[in-house]
Amino acid sequence: DTQLVGTMTENEEPSYSNIVTENGDNISLYFDYDDYEKSLLDLYPNASGAYSLRLLNHVWEYMPVVEVRRSSDDAEQSFTAAEVADGTLLTWVGSNDGHVTTWYDQSGNGNNATQTDPAKQPKIVEGGVMVADGLKFDGEDTLDLTTDIISSTNNVSSFLVSQTNDISGSTIPLALSRNSPNDARYYLGVVNAGNFYLGYGTDAYEINLGTADTSTHLFSATSNNTTTEAFIDTVSKG
Image (cartoon, rainbow, N blue to C red):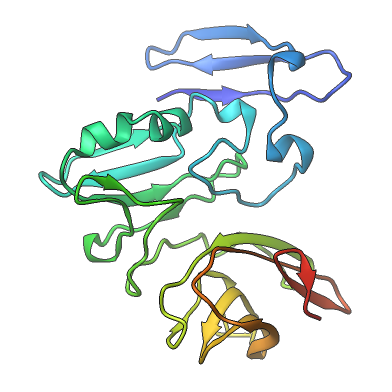
């Protein structure tokens, strides 16, 4: 496995970084900041967790964003963002289904989202076709986050892009913290009875984000010790 370690900020001398190879050799690299287009985590650093099939962190370029299980033989393999985009992943899966076993945390904190139960692994390839714009969860599928990804619901900002095909059901696309044991819900993009919600604290439907539909939306929320605010497509809903 390859591990990339190092930091760099704009207008500062780039730092040296190390790639630790399988044989234990250390290779020093020198980065020119201008060689990189700013990624999301360059602009907004210090995330507790960051998950995407696209590159969110320029130091993650050669590291995997996802690990996939192939349905034909249950073989597993990891893929970079480039390999997801250029067809390498799809070629490896072939005409089968590809199920995600690990969605890697690009923040560098190791808070990977994982699922060891094959019956609960979401699809990234279905019948030899890439799932459009992300991962497909069938209602029973989950990727589990580490229990300590956030230390308090009173100091959290979260962002989620998701789409539902069942507006009459009840689903929670992102749960950073659950109700038990401390009524510490933090549910983003909740769908219930035809509406979108933010679930927070003692209420799974704390803030109504409006009528649910089957379009793709950006859900976001911020909270501190005194207030919580939720947004859909950057529009505040209270």
